[in-house]
Length: 421
Ligand SMILES: Nc1ncnc2c1ncn2[C@@H]1O[C@H](COP(=O)(O)OP(=O)(O)OP(=O)(O)O)[C@@H](O)[C@H]1O
Ligand SMILES: [Mg+2]
Image (spheres, rainbow, N blue to C red):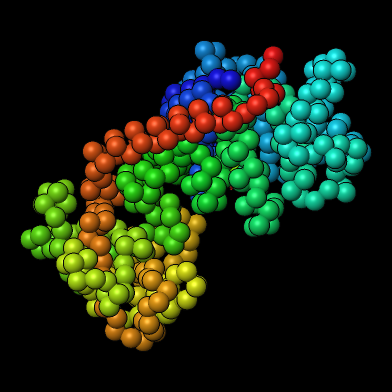
């Protein structure tokens, strides 16, 4: 096992385009780190530089205490699982898993023991004599994982390993990977652009945009205290709403109505006249379902609902609004960059499913003003990030992780393969 330390990593391809631009990232020993971001933001490139499949233009890459910039991939002792996990069709499951050991000329009885241990861990024992073509998608994926973990590598690197699977299988494999990583305790870097994988798998998540690191934090911190518009819009589905607002005293006038802000937020706005207010869909509620004292702790907006979607556990309502053309253009750009394609300026609100709000209605929507974010429209910075809350969240995340690892260690009877030598 080893930590992976990246300092000021830059990757320019032949055409000079910086696919990865000055990324500094510390993956701690045993940590599960997620790399996430829209298509083309440099996730795979960064991962390939860690493994050594891509040259590093500048900056330093360290694995453990070794500088590996010029170390050949084979000498780095890392295991990678790709999206198209190409198994050898003519080899049995056993031999597919054994492949890296055969390459390394590991003695036969040790190969046998390690393949069987790995198969046991991945519940593949009864399939060891079968060929990949006869397996289900999930079983094939597990064989690919087996081939990666049998090597007792210092770290695992995954590049969207589940994107070929259907949604249900992806969900199952997700929990398997999480369990396995925690059990083996091996440093892992996992690339995805799946929201759920990003939020559920990792200890921390690194968000990339156009080759630049935006924020590295626990999933909860990313969600509750995003650094900027990009992270705020990227993390969470449906996305956070961004309403243009003019600042009038301690009120933010949005196209949907006025939102009062507390002193901390008012101070953060400073002398800006125009801001973007960030409100997550679930920070809204049908005002008629909100108790009087809760109602007093927020603000009520009146707005015309255009479309509703009742999902059983939630009701989404779409509320279009008018925005000045320059703001609307900025929001369209942001939406495009986030891999979305919002055609109109509209707020998406998530309400209690018992709400009777219907399309065409002028609805009363309550907003939890304690959960508002305020962004600078030109820099995109979150002006209302609460550093105290951030510190508390980081502490909680570390404590939860330590407790989880400790529980995992006492639960595990046999010695996991990665800890044998
Ligand atoms: N061999 C190459 N030559 C030139 N440019 C490249 C090469 N490989 C990747 N790029 C560019 O580098 C940028 C980052 O690509 P990369 O594959 O790392 O993105 P990604 O975040 O993994 O995207 P995706 O989610 O689509 O897999 C892209 O703009 C891409 O066009
Ligand atoms: Mg990629």
